[in-house]
Amino acid sequence: AFIIAFLACAGLNAFLQDDTKAKTILDGVSAKMKSYTTMKIEFTYTMGNTKTNVNESRSGVIQIKGSKYKLEIGGQIVFCDGSTVWTYLKDDEEVNVNNVSTSDDAANPTTILTNYNANFKPKLIKEVIVGTKTVAVIDLTPLKTKSFYKVRLNIEKSSQQIVSTIVYDKNGSTYTYTVTKFTSDLAMPDTQFTFNAADYPGVEVNDMR
Image 1 (cartoon, helix red, strand yellow):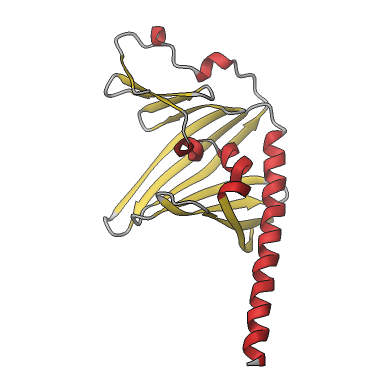
Image 2 (tube, rainbow, N blue to C red):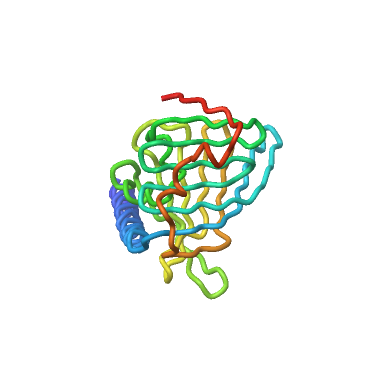
């Protein structure tokens, strides 16, 4: 009984220690990202599902300015000015307009990191050496029911930058975002985060608000 109690306490202490380490790392990354006026992140996106034998990959780019962002990937452009989201579908020649909701959080990495304390339970899984760099592997478990059950962040510790993000969906799919290029503090006018119908003549506008 004593050994069982000891192991239980040792395990609990390990979890608490890992959670504290994870929070320290995430707070550092969050502070670093908040220090940038703007960010441009080029990435590769892979969606995989072993059950359905799906493995799709594509490249994309997201530009971020506070709560505003512009995401370009796979034949669509998503504009967000912080309160409204426009999703332009090139092939369909239409744009869907919605209000920002909590479901949009995954699109903007700064939002996840800003609100992770209230929305997720962080846990440091391990630290691995990749080349000459140390990468922290941290799992975020949502505190409220979501369509996904876990987000895994791979963070390069010295630069305090996210290397990749993996979202684990409850349907068995995984969505992996790997950063290929990161640029900060570029000039980005607010107008680029708003859909301007004049720039897309003939596009059907579906206001779903």
